[in-house]
Image (cartoon, rainbow over all chains, first blue to last red; front, side, top):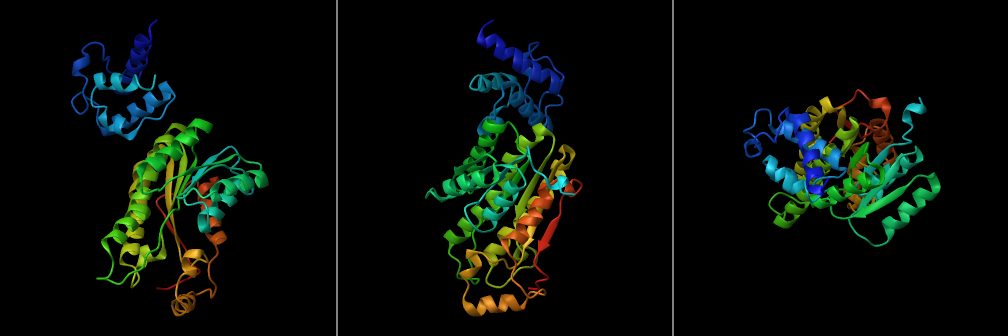
Length: 80
Length: 252
């Protein structure tokens, strides 16, 4: 299994747990404040979930910049 | 009762820990078993020595991060140090602060910026960094140091009073937001405490302040540290959003 696939599986799992959506169905549509349930409270839960999954602490810029699922994949690649 | 003051297995961050109140709070936590991450603004070897001494005297791990709390990266680095070493954070004491007096109309812009950045923005950065790590453990205690001046005001302390009043506002808001996550946020409002900072006062002013204390003695850093220990421990597990005056009945 490639690192990219592993990364995606981890991120997908957190998105499913926190937002209750499968981001693979329509990745481009999973966007902060547009996807149902992805509000500021859920965003912090998402961050906590990703930090737990990747055993890291995200930089503030990354937390604020995580505006979509695609962006989350891009950011979490730096912590993988 | 003593068991409930035991901080063994807990991890605490204390800012401004190289002297005064911060140093005594850190030492009190160490004496009760907490692992510590200390902070000091300057790297002059002092904080390293303090960390070493506390670790030796109390057999607890003590590390430190040098940096100005006015910069968000300092609180982020403190949290990362706790995360990297212990994967947890239980207690965060926002203690670092400066006292710059000045009559209205005579306070330079740079003093306003420095005071607000260290005393207030520093606390905001600390709360943000602490809360993220604490919510993983689903518990935590954030202790902010405000001042009697922030509660009641004082002539010649326009900026200091504003910065410390801001800390009270931040404490109350953070307590509400973080209560569902079992993270408690409280503030200690010291009165006239015997530190290097107050020893800089002119003799006449010092005497005036002493006369305004109901208990007729100056407070000690240990008086503040004992209250911080209460807030850090399980004895205060149902206490949040409180501003606790530790001032010996001082009236301003």
